[in-house]
Image (cartoon, rainbow, N blue to C red):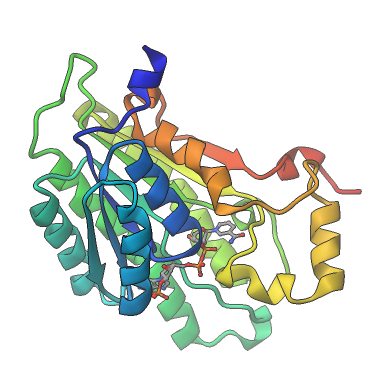
Length: 265
Ligand SMILES: NC(=O)c1ccc[n+]([C@@H]2O[C@H](COP(=O)([O-])OP(=O)(O)OC[C@H]3O[C@@H](n4cnc5c(N)ncnc54)[C@H](OP(=O)(O)O)[C@@H]3O)[C@@H](O)[C@H]2O)c1
């Protein structure tokens, strides 16, 4: 019974940033659980390669190329995905840009770009997706119509040098998750976030390229290793599935225990 409630057969999911890294891992996990999946990112070649990988699950996969810094294009991607899949039940907002600079050097243009991609696009894609979710009736008497999973970060709760803008937008994503969860609970839309710890992807390449620094990071992780995309599979399927129908407004930390260590070693 409980394993049935983790299944996503017949569901349609949109994953932003689904062409690589954590977004790809989550898109593949949703497809493995039975969902048809649309992925959006800028690079068409990587979108095509990701679609081949996700398609190996046997589920339908659609790709949409859009720069989420362009809000019209971001919203169009939601509309196009919902139209192509025939409905929208799940949104995972994994796309994000990073900016590594000390506060004293950040320019207003860099700030605006980060806010546009990492914060504004997330907010309004959630809004557009919620409207799509409201177009269909809930499948059962639990009255849940849709699931949104945003991606937070340790930088939303602690400060790290040189990622002030990223931490600011991730703090915003975390707070919007709670605000949307509250307003949309009566509408049957659950909004949660996953808070990944430290994962070795293109986004964190600058950290892991430095052996001393990466050893320091790993020494701070109680479970003794950085995360790999598959580590998010269980969390995203749970939060997207009927198994989590009574869970909303939460951040599920998937961080190898990073946050329980307190002040450090
Ligand atoms: N890696 C970590 O340790 C870590 C930790 C905590 C949270 N996170 C979060 O997890 C999520 C995924 O991160 P990741 O490490 O997998 O990053 P990644 O490997 O750099 O992948 C980022 C994805 O977002 C897409 N993207 C970036 N800018 C975009 C834009 N302007 N428009 C459309 N798509 C865009 C990229 O494709 P294109 O470049 O082709 O557009 C790619 O598919 C992000 O929200 C990140 O903040 C990561």
